[in-house]
Amino acid sequence: MGAARWQGRSGAGLPVPAVVVTCLAVLVAGWWARSPCLDLTAWARGVQYSGYCYTDVVPLWFGRGLADGAGPYGAQPLEYPPVLAVRIWLAAVLAHALPGDPALWTFSVTNGLLVVLESLAVLVLLRRLGLPPSRLVWWAAAPPLFLYAFYNWDVLPLVLLLGALLLHRDGRDTAAGAVAGLGAAAKVFPGFLVPLVVLALLARGRRGAALRHGAAALGAWAAVQLPPYLLARDGWARFYELSSERGMHVDSVWYLLFRLGGPALSPSALSVASAAVFGLGAVVVVVLGVRNRPPEDWWQLLVPVLVCFLLANKVYSPQYTLWLVPLLALVLRRAAPFLALVAADLAVHAVEFPFLGGRSGFGAELPYPLLGTAVAVRAAVLCWILVEVVRRPTPVEREGGPQFQEGSQNRSSKAS
Image 1 (cartoon, rainbow, N blue to C red):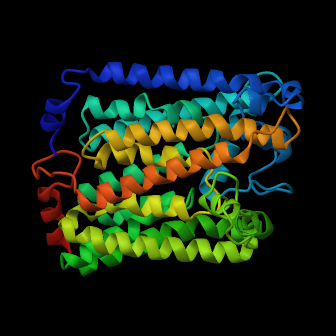
Image 2 (image 1 turned 180 degrees about the horizontal axis):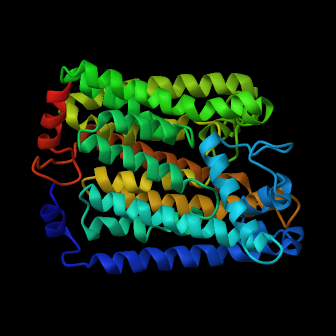
């Protein structure tokens, strides 16, 4: 799947600078769309729902002590894994370092600038992985980037995931494992790459490389977990406590099944069921997917594995769709499933926030069937993407492109 083949399909001659400008324009528009929620008086009127401007930047600035200069695991710890907790704290440190009194607006700006850098890093990594401008636009102009780049902090884990993919493509599997481990210490999904790479290396007889990749991933993950675990164990554990305590959210498949007559599982039972469904689904898609592609392309199965996670999870936070966008640009053979996912996700977004606003006492509550229908359509599109990737491997040109190059693999195989 070389660059020339992609350009021959669509978007030939689209200049890379135009893609960068598009990405920056989308990000500026996305930040501006969140700016009404930087006025705290607006929250009292429910603008975070009616104006579609909710962002976690606001509650964390005031509710976790960042406005007062608190660290990531202080008296009111950040409910995030260590890499993201430090990333959020860094934006607060920058806000405090600027002249004048630190304010919510300052924190939003410093955080936003970091998000812009991370989003451009995704673009650079996709280009390094071989995507032509016609595919880079999938990320640069993606509605999920506009909607969710400043909603939470999920772009940094994407940078780490794509960095691990690039290192793996270049045969640097130990470094790839370390970067994937750091990604898993930010959000769990970059860690899904590790078992796929290990299995692929074992299938090619590279047991030493597989061991080093897995050990590097585990070591990097543990290395960033250890300091907060030793120094602020209660704060470090907050993320895991909240994850286990959360019940099914209204935008999850579990809640849809519940509204259709399914059981009302407790949070602990739901956690077990969610993990079991995800584990079973991941095993099935990997077993089926490896039959249709050589081991060096097994990383493509990260997409259906991630889909299984999203469908099985008891929470589908709005920004989760953002995880898929760069991977779909790399893996899908055609644009139709991607466009369908974008449309379905927009439908969920359009209904979910008025629904939540009504539940919180801001206006009339929308009937759940509207949201449930949108959630069901999105789930169906995700299943379509799963089947598409498992059954139809992306064509590979071994001399280049976004797939792994045999030359670099051969170089690394001599070392193992």
